[in-house]
Image (tube, rainbow, N blue to C red; front, side, top):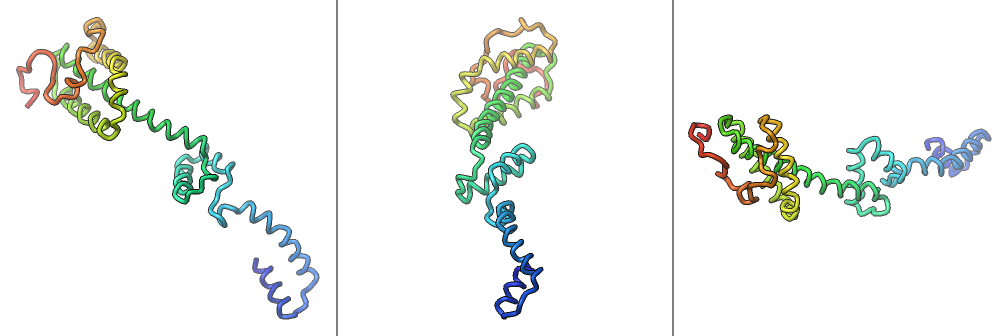
Length: 203
């Protein structure tokens, strides 16, 4: 670019240019369009679609930042729509998976609390309280998950039942085949199934 400016200045001043300089000037003019094409991103702020696709596969965080920038500037044609749609859908799936996992742990500990009362501990108590609170917060932040919760309760219970069996070493048949707790009971503070507590675990 400096060479090109120097040539232009010389020609404006009427200074004859050396033949080699003219040859370089013409060469620069030939190269410049190609250079501009490959350097689109710095000049226009746009990233070619193939580069965005590659970025998705090699640097996911950078891809998310690029998509956010394109959305902010309403550059719809530059968006990586197939991967963007897939990622948005996966976010919803992640929320449902987190809900299932938290409820599984909560139900599993309620079963342990009820069917292995002699092993009750503050650790179990804290797990029940934390999972209740965190699951409720998740539902408050994603209220549309509540209908799904009722639909998936039995399957979640089966996972919680497996968890309780594995952690208590009690036979699977010890626990009911169907969830013995309502959703209202599962989330109610102070609901601890089974025999009343006779020691200082709750203190």
